[in-house]
Image 1: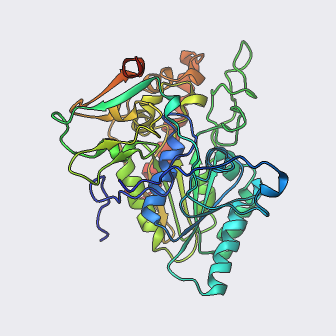
Image 2 (image 1 turned 120 degrees about the vertical axis):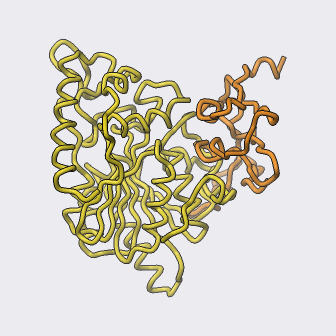
Image 3 (image 1 turned 180 degrees about the horizontal axis):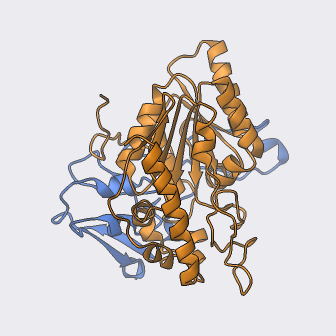
Length: 298
Length: 102
């Protein structure tokens, strides 16, 4: 049994500091904590996206470790290359990690990630999911949920915002029979940190998908980032799960969900949603949970 | 305080002053983020129970827990208010910056 990581025993050293992310950015918190747990001997690969845009502003460099900006489509490939290089040079006790956004993972970087998992490369891949292309000004991505207003899926008389649903990235990755995959939320940080710690000792590829609210893109006050990410899990629109040894495991199975309406009405991107749209979200949620509760271990 | 420190930087004057190639030193921060703030978090040390919740949830990692009381690095705090919102004993107050700068 691994020792539990809490706020008290987490290192005080910062490896991701002085970055220019918006105030209250959930994604930067996910990267910050992951770097703390992985430690100084980490090689980070970041594609175009918020996290590279806020940390590599010449002459600023917010990472205290080695980090590189990759072409947009190749986070998985670059991280795999770094891992291969480390192995060839005989540099041990290191981690090669990728930090990509939702678009960089589910749309543009999908084949590079798929290739890395297929080869079983020794990398840890983080998908920091803020549910749209935030860095370029909030465009819809494959992980944008139904009913989200973005600049490329505007809400109006004819459309409720995004009409597509969130791509099921976690199960797409699991379908590769990956060594370790997990979903997390910045609302449940102890759970997230435990999963990062677990990924450190995995032989093969690990994938951690973390839901990270974006105050700018979601139209929320900056201080509610953490509580909103918690509410996303509590209302059932996001879930905490793991996949290892060919088995799915549901980490949190709430007895009753909090109302979806309370969650969506806090956010500017969902402000236009009608009761019918919210019912649609609830139907989708119930369908998903019915399957998860039936088929997955608890 | 073991947080990364700000480095001094002189603007390159000619093109030859720019770094050659694509590599730069890591942990190289040349400007602070304090100017972003409208509200400043202030810790009431009497009320603080050292649960470290604020240290954990700070997206910028500006809360230092190395001494026996928590300290905020105001050079890099952006004033997002996550710490105050998440603080259970309500030991962190968001105070308007204008009150400090006159």
